[in-house]
Length: 304
Image 1 (cartoon, rainbow, N blue to C red):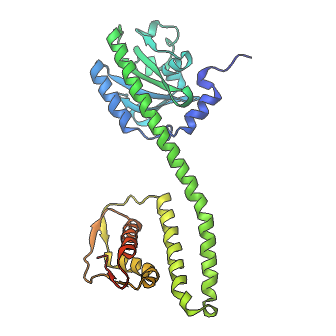
Image 2: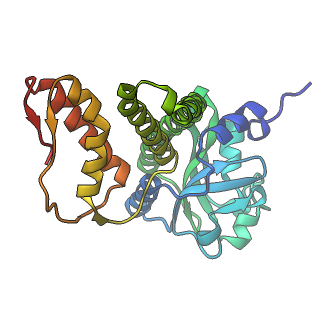
């Protein structure tokens, strides 16, 4: 059986789809590289094209005509880059109208692609994800210097692709970890809730510890939720007095065990911070934990 061409190869497509590069967002790094390459080579169009099964998606683009500057993709009927992937080597075209591989390609009539110079982009496991290319709207004899320049730009883009894939994998791993942590935390919260319902049967000295456990698990739950959906709000006023009061109450049992007094000064003003409340709590938690740890027994720890 004849193996499928590289564009339709299932392993290549699986690698492309799992890379996180097809999420539909232009990549600023690729936008800068395409803009720089277009200026250096004096071409109207430069693209970082990711070749999918039936379309090409532009992760970076400079000079695309309407409406493709908005849609950021074309069907493969309008793709020269698929040939760079299929052939696995640079594609150098002086005049597309005279090249049998692309003479009837829709990009010639609809996008004005006449001269093309593109190098395949290798991703993880040497799969070819697409091509980095420069385009002219008139016939052009590409010089050796221009071919070498596009080769160098392609290497830059390939390195950036590897970095983005690595970040995507780290993000995916973090999402799995956060999801897996929710189950044991929910179990602790349920157990804590059951203990609170039977608080009248427990020794009185356990009540502060039970409250601390309940508060800590609630805090951990909020932290996981915030990490799963990062807070990207603009700067806003934060009531540091209220935040510090919660943190201090959470650490009172640990401080009591060392005979320490906890407190903070009154009159803390509202402060405008571009940070979620859980971030401020986390910082205060760390500072107060260290203060309790290193303050001599019988002393006073005052976070603010």
